[in-house]
Image (cartoon, rainbow, N blue to C red; front, side, top):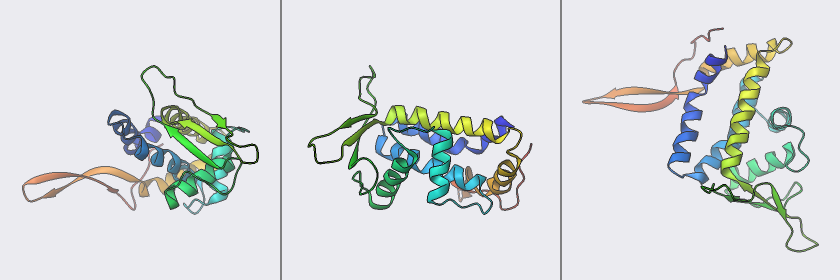
Length: 191
């Protein structure tokens, strides 16, 4: 079953690798903050995510982290994905600063910088370490879905997974062109 879960997310894991290899860290960051939405939607009854599901997924799989809470993650997600900003109006930080990984791994990660006593701090994150944390969280979720007592969430996942965008290809005159699309509206998921 874990192999099937890995296969279902292959498009996303491969895109993470392409972003890392191409040093496209800004694009990678966007992918990292949207993945909890996708996971939360897949395990939900109606196949949709919302703020409570996003925060709940983050709390379960990133842990109860007081330094970077599920609420902070959600407020960052909203600012970044919907406004293209790293400044937030809610949460314990006034904004975020992202750095790309360095070969020797000396970039600060999870560091709060307060520039004035009356202001909320800026939280610094290393996109490379965020990548490791996010992929680990998704793998923990894969394991958790298969545990006794989580059959409802797993069944929701199985029902919604055919709608997840997957890599494919299409033929146009003289060429085969790679695509990303939903490959099936009725396709099954093996167990």
